[in-house]
Image 1 (tube, rainbow, N blue to C red):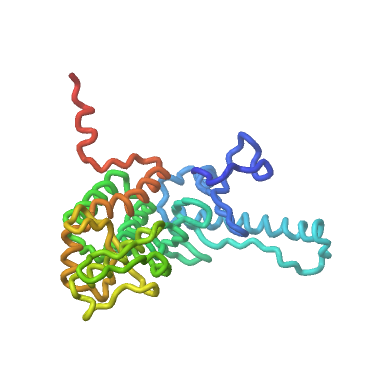
Image 2 (tube, rainbow, N blue to C red):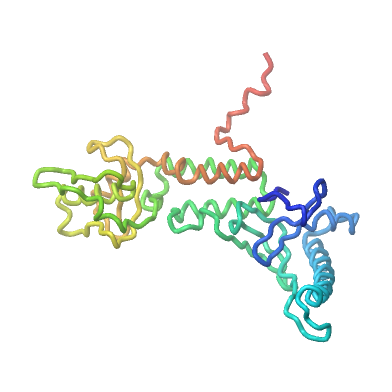
Length: 314
């Protein structure tokens, strides 16, 4: 169990084990496994639902002890008379069979009991793949492997799935419209310089333009240059767009935006041909996977033959 921050001395003395896995505002997450293994010598062989039940019973016992202490705390620290009601209370909220803590308020937990009722809930808060600027198809994949890890999947099984998914992206099995970075371009007008005149292809892009803005300007340029602007809308600063980097192409365009609900067939075909799919995997998904594997203390090797020569002795 790794802690996100060093343990203060007032919580746990140096050299002692801190079983408080995570704290956020008035919530405390306690690692109960060592205590459960001490109380039930056959704990490791018990069915998962019995383990959950035992954990909950221990939590109820702690809840009672803490709340009795709160009564003394209210009197000694806040001068609340012994016979007067106070509002300090600790409550057992849920049993979490496994959890992943990335940073403060960025975590995932597999809840199996909540207020005495059996559950099967994956509760995710603040992780990057849930954000609006993360392609949903990539987020769904990350969510799936995270769920599997929390439920006991091993490294090799996860690596196999990542390799298969990467192949689908690179080989074009997933439409490029599903792989674009979602974002807004509210400052689009700030970076459009001299617009292309008749016979010219590109408008001027002012210095400092974000990549998504550059991509949107180039989409509008293509729309006009290919005379598609009569039937299709140009991207404006109020639009929600998607964008991708491109491979080498005849127009030397580095990145291109698009509106997936209103895109000409010619631009769609151009994207399918020149979108840098490998870059999509490496720049968007791979770096998130690297952080995930580092947290798990797993090695992320997508080459299935990386260790092939380790068993060969010369």
